[in-house]
Image 1 (cartoon, rainbow, N blue to C red):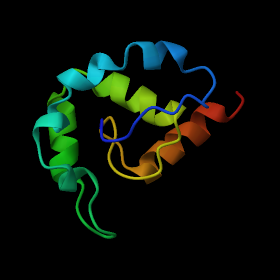
Image 2: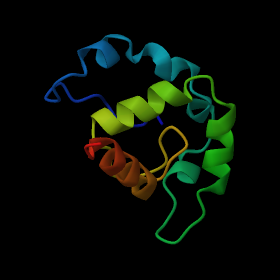
Image 3: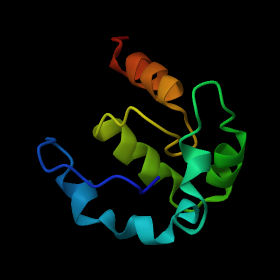
Amino acid sequence: MPASSPNSDHRGTAALESTWDWRDEALCAETDPEAFFPEKGGSTREAKELCIECAVQHQCLTYALAHDERFGVWGGLSERERRRLAFRTAQPG
């Protein structure tokens, strides 16, 4: 989801920021952002369905994980799902 601006304070994301133009190909850029930031308890289904079809889903998710995006659907995952993914990948073994 390209609604947020990259933050240059994050380390290890120079490659992502230098290729930030992936946002131009994001399907969400052509839709209502409300679907990607539902009210608490609201459905994320519409956003996730769009993400599945998006050519830049991987770049979007990578950006969200690298920048610790805490709100909305990014790369087809909710904030809770991204937290779980980050936790699993940080675990040794």
